[in-house]
Length: 95
Image (cartoon, rainbow, N blue to C red; front, side):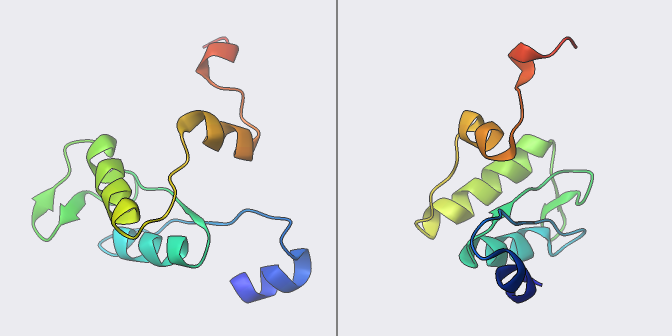
């Protein structure tokens, strides 16, 4: 799919990887290595590792962050992520 997107869009797009189930962190890591973004969360996966339940989305995000850092990739700050995705942010919404 990335090869097709490269042909269609050149470098004018941002792709991200999300996976459901036990391979969420593995496939997210591959996506980052390929130059993409990754998202994780309890709605897709309940485990940090074999038999180890995540207590929160923060647990999964922290583990993905550690993996990305260990591979020496940059991690976008929340404000940078919102800017890349064209999102307003909580302070500019009415809920």
